[in-house]
Image (cartoon, rainbow, N blue to C red):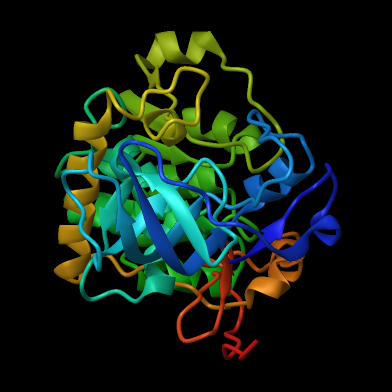
Amino acid sequence: MRAMICRRWGGPEDLRLEEVESQPLKSGQVRIKVHAAGVSFATTLVIAGKYQRRPPFPFAPGTEVAGTVTEVDPACRRLEVGDEVVAVLDWGGLAEEAVAHEVNVFRKPKNLGFVEAIQLAISYPTSAGALTWPETLDVRSGHTLLVHAAAGGVGMAAVEIGKILGATVIATAGGARKTEFAKAHGADHVIDYRAADFRDEVLKLTGGRGVDRVYDPVGGEIFDQSLRCMAVGGRICPIGFASGTIPQVPANILLVKTIAVMGFNYGYYVGWSPHDARFEEADRTFALMERIRDWCEQGLCRPHVDRTYRLVEAPQAMRALRHRPRRGRHGDLTGAENRERIAPRHGRVRGLEPVDR
């Protein structure tokens, strides 16, 4: 099979498309013919050797795939050959086939294509876990939810899921096109943070009360100002630091307003932390993914991808992540009918037609 291989730490330009041998299955694993794979900013960190997990050389980067099961280890119980699935990998996604633990593989919604389904590997469960689990935001009907970076992959998912849960959703994004995109995906109110102070706007929209819940993929000053427009007893969940700045939490504000801060790392539940919790958390992640699949099949969640690339164009997809207009998801790799596509996970760029090899 062909795979995009990393043989040394570096940039996207150091990756090479190579013929490699198929990986044998271990107990409890399945083999997947990859129709689509995703790349994200984390992918660029992995190949640079700057991520918390460093795969052994040589390896194919990529942790999100959608495709068809072609082989199943006898120890597997849920999946069968021919199932159309979405999978989370440790690495190995930028290839024509991938091997994954069955606990990290989930059936694809029937009404989604493989490219759109890529969002269900990481973006949607990240938002769904952060918004629904009781130890995180636990969003309920009647809550007011503030979603930052609402035109990005996880932000867009959070807007949709917040509305499913019955919340009033206030979304922030930069620029008119992005706020329109967030509005189209269900936000009740949108704030262009480039044109107005979102803290002041939130307080106006809530009659000075503030929001009950905050979903924050940005960090930095966004986190700091969010604390100042929250209601008493509110919760804020940082799920990333896209701003590049990790905020220092002012404990006095937490005390005075009885605010709770709870982080959420979906990677922990799929085996990406030093303690591999994927097996002990398997029932929980399965239930979460079944809930997301049901929402998709009801038409309540509408994952979006604008641009696709061929496997050989994976370096271009990664470079595009650095210069993208972030709206929805940007990019995916597919391998159906001798064609391949790659979709970078965040942002939104006009589509490219798949090209034969």
